[in-house]
Image (cartoon, rainbow, N blue to C red; front, side, top):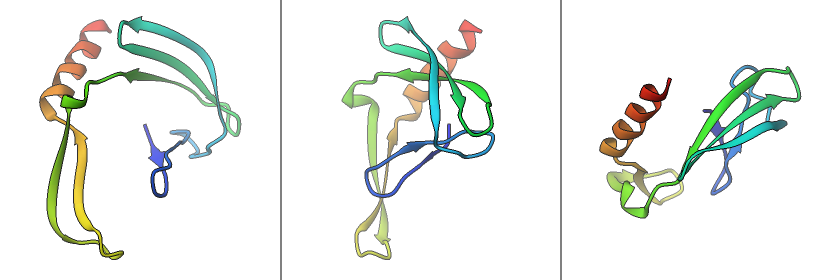
Length: 96
C-alpha cells in the first residue's frame, strides 16, 4: 500500500492514480487483532482492500545504517522484523 508523507505524517494514496481522497466503503474485524477495509478513490473510483494488523512493540526493529542524512540526522531503518512479516504473510495466504 503506497504511503507518502513528510516528517511523521503518512497519507494513504490510491494504488491506481495516487490521489489521497479516499473513503472507506466497509470495515470488518477479521480476527482479534486485524481489521480489513474496502476503500474507494474519490478521483478515479478504483476500489481495493487493505488489512490492518495490530502488533506488539517487540515486533518492531531498529537498525543504524551509518552515515548522515542531508539534514544532519543519522540514517536508520525502522520496521517490522522479517520473522513477523513471514508469519503475517503465511496467515494471509492461508485465508485466501
